[in-house]
Figure 1 (cartoon, rainbow, N blue to C red):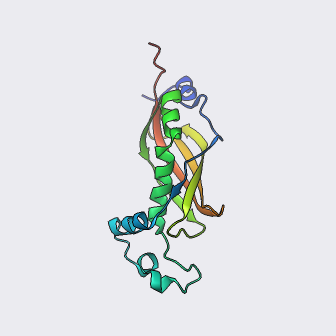
Figure 2 (spheres, rainbow, N blue to C red; figure 1 turned 45 degrees about the horizontal axis):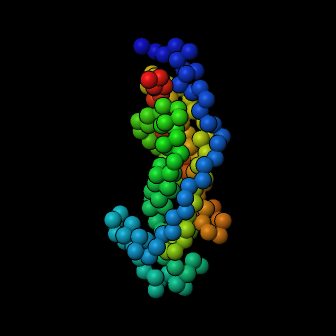
Length: 165
């Protein structure tokens, strides 16, 4: 059964489109840096060999892109933003529908990352009646205020009536 126009309005009503939320900072220490690469089998010398990388333009090993993507998604989802969407708007997230990531600057051991997340848009799902799609934009910066990652994450969600008890 396809939801009515009124149900669609309820699905999107009041969502904080355009609101920017900043995560806590996270320093990627030496141990965590190596553990992330070991667990992901990212054994390229670009990520693991300090001596080889010391004479490059970066002067140090680089955090692999998929590891940075995971750290950024984790910073956003472990902060209060998801909890606020769940509690204030009765949102239940069902799935991440993809990730579009643009890596802008390298991340090296000792860098601290913060993420500004914006709920960029929300729409009714075309294929999942009663569900919607929120698109989040994450802009991750390091301690030098360099953008290290821009990432779009569409997420499938449902929304339930507020609990009136």
